[in-house]
Length: 274
Image (cartoon, rainbow, N blue to C red):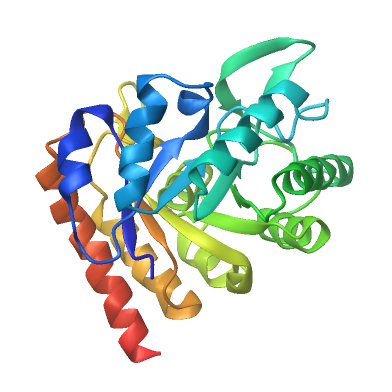
């Protein structure tokens, strides 16, 4: 059974390889390992021999105007066949347009046409992989003019495409703070039956705007407010594989493992209460 995992960093290779915490797993960004061979893939294979792995994609541009790039998708399929991940996920975002790529997960205006295009692209990816993927909703920084509410959009997306959802609790908190809606209401409304995975991460304040604009920076420990929302979500969903993300100011592996234990304990308590 998967409990709480950790985003895998190269500097933690030896400690990750040796770790034996109950239910521990690791996530990697798929694009970092789309190669035909070499030391990076050999390193990942050694980790996979000891621990379950998940692939978290950042480059398919599923909400873009075009279908997923066929070469990129083929490399993802080859990687998935090589390491047999327990989970595969991607983002509800776009990052490519007219042959150009941006190093960002760019925001989506939720319209009926966007919903149809996104569902079709997810279907293409799932057909190629031969498996269901989980889609992560974004953090919000701007109030865009949407046709469809976010919860309705995610619910319909899962129903149309057969995908599952990756709920990033920090994204919920950041977006609620920045746009002025209730994070608790969002957590209470999300369709828990569709949730395959949960992410936890830290955030930071914008240097100019402070608390008025929070950034999903992944460079701080998980905040108490996000821990509270996580417990609230688990009370509805039951235990779900959970990932602790840290991409900046990365501490020692032992520190991440200690923070991870808090999620592991909450998952165990939720399972016992079920």
